[in-house]
Each structure stands twice: as C-alpha cells, then as structure tokens.
Amino acid sequence: MRNGLERLLRYTVLTGFLMPNSAHTITEIAKELAKHPFVTYLDDVQLSDGLLAGAIKNAAVIACSDMGLLVPYVCSSAKVQLFLFQNGGHKFSSGGFVETVVGSGVEHIVVYGHSVCNYTKHMAKSVVDTPAKKGLEFSERSQLELYSVALDCDSASLWEHVGQFNVLFELSKMLADPSILQLATERNLELHAWFYKSDSEQFEVFDPERGAFVVPDINLSNSSVISLVTAEGHYR
Image (cartoon, rainbow, N blue to C red; front, top):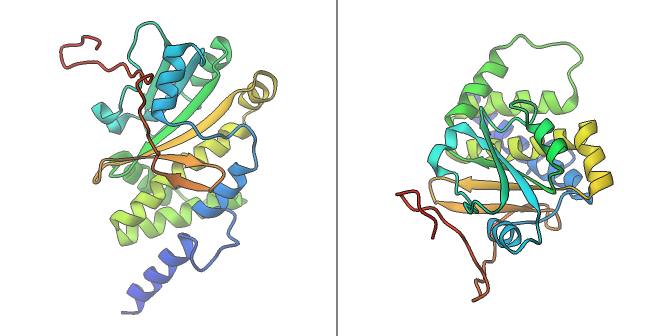
C-alpha cells in the first residue's frame, strides 16, 4: 500500500500539481520556451497553406520513427521544400538534421511527438538502467525521475506526459544549440511543437501564449488548399 501511495505522490509531483516550482515539469519547461520569441504557434494546416502559397519558403519536420505511417504528410506537393526526418525519438542531433537546416536556410522547424510510443519506453528503460553520472543537470535529473516513475506506474496518461515532455525538452535543447540559435537570431527561424494522441487520434499544437498543447481551431475556408497523397501515390 505504501509503495502505491509513494508512486502516486511521485506521479502527482512530476506532473506539476504539487511542485509548481520544478523547472522541468511540463508546465515549467513550457513557460521557459514561451519566453523565446523564436518559439511560435503553427499548426499543420497553416504550414501546408504557407508552403503552397509561397509565404513559407521551406520547413523541416522531425518526428519519431515509431510513428511510421501515422505521420501526416502535411504537404505532399512536389512543388514545395519540406524536409521530413524520422529517427529514434525525434533527435535533432542525428541524421544530418542541423546540417540540412543550416545549409537550406530552413525557416520553420517542427518537433513532432506522439503517445503510445514504443521507442519512448525503450529509451526510458535505457536511461534508467544506465548507471547515474555525477553532476547531472537538473533537467537530466528531472528526466531520469520522470522516466523512473513512468516505468514503475506504466500509466497511459503518464506516458502521454512523458511524450509531451520529450517534445518540449528536445525543443529546448535545439535552442541551446549554437547553430540553431544563430539561425533563429539572424534568419528569423521559428520553432514549433506538435503532439499526436494516438488513442483519440487528436492532433495538438504547442501554444506558447497558453504554455500548453492545444487542439487547433481549424476553420477551413474556400481559399485553404491542402495537398494529400492517395494510397496509389497520386496527388490530389
């Protein structure tokens, strides 16, 4: 009984209800990101319309390889420049992501995560099983604790929190990268975060003004154009 109560308490603390001052709960990391003028709201329809209309020259979306075909190709038109990266998690430090962003002068970067992610559980176990290093940053300690509780509780709602935390945490690491930060400062690069709830098939966007993931208020007008790819591979 005691172990169950301890796990519940740890879960409550980590999700921000009993420890609002923790700098790396979802709430607090969201507040930190909201302070950056480079982190803005942009949903999938706005990105697609912007690319097709030419208002957005190019963009890069980095998602988890575990998402597979669940990744909506927000704009499949061959006329636009949209770089789509998928790797274990959504790590921007691999696969030539930074080199592509810098070399192509990318204007928008999207970090795209999702719930029910097998890789997240694998990564969490790997982090927890790795002998702890001395002098960990507070963010790393928070991440380790969050992963430990998630593995102990194995709660779907907690894993969803982990997924959202990982997306925002990756965004914060991007802002600490000198190359990305220089692009944001000199070329007005904008960064965005998306999250897909697999069970409910709900797409959410990080809104820095609210400091949270929100469901987009999509109002499709006659001028809105979305290019999709059919099962046969044709554009429509």
